[in-house]
Image 1 (cartoon, rainbow, N blue to C red):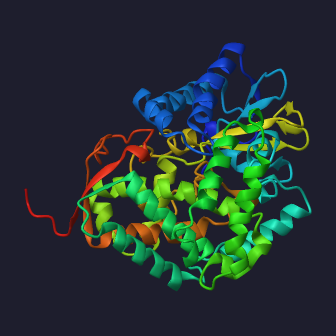
Image 2 (image 1 turned 180 degrees about the vertical axis):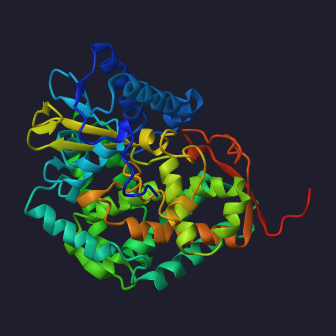
Image 3 (image 1 turned 90 degrees about the horizontal axis):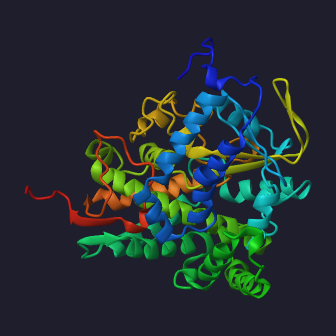
Length: 438
């Protein structure tokens, strides 16, 4: 943890002036940083394109480009001279902290995010304005029990997880994404909507369809008929308000917020499977993650650090802002490229390693640029619930079984971890512990 008296390095200064990128560097940012994330799918991942991105090492090249830009222009932010809607690219952790801490000046919604999220959650808290935003945020925090490490529904949630993980691993010697993902959604639907929703794929399948449309933002027409069917399928379970589920806590009054909960749990499933790959290749960490608790949650946190499920955090300036002697105008879209800060070898000695301990001892939490669940007033309200669920799933998966990663890439503890990990392509050999010696 950085001592309070220590001055920030030059690339972390918060009073540095903004600079304007050249046209060539603007094109490089658009093509080498922003476009890959958009093509892979910001709202719903496209498996084939994620696989191609891994093979082409696009994330590693994007991170390297960001480092070159910081060396060339200084700590920034770097203003991209776009003709219609200006963009600014923060290049240091201090600016990330400033932007995320002030949700009034840097709105978490903004033009591009509204165009995407309105496809499936037009009344979601992220794209709401006051006074609705505060009311919806309070509802989310109340049901998801923000800042409580153990949710009041811990007992029924743990029972659901044990039930489904046991069924998943029964008589199984191989585990791939398709099998895990099916079990994951059985867990999620039971936790969010109740046991009766376990096998009802209609709401989640329709949500996937709407999210694929949302990848295209304003370039895809909204399917109002599909969204009405989705809302009706969701309300069937919310109106039932089954005890022991999140729906039982709040009922139909949260109908316009539940789509985001399901959206977030999709990303959480990707993270859990990636974390399993790390534990399969890092035996020291695996031994400590076999019981639910802080260490399993720290494994999830560091997995999101290594492979952020939200590579682009967007904030739109609601007023002119001063950066040194440079004023950036209202309406500018600030784009935080999280992989750059999460893998910054200049500030993180563990940048390319699996380091869950850094979250337990406070080292990682003290870094302003490490934002696996965003930060500030718009931080993910379901952070603690997601960590509890994913940590429990990991613990149940590894408690009585061991895994050998069969599909690429190599995740060697002694080598830098890859910047992209295709969760759709991971495959494991599964055996009950202890494995016989080869």
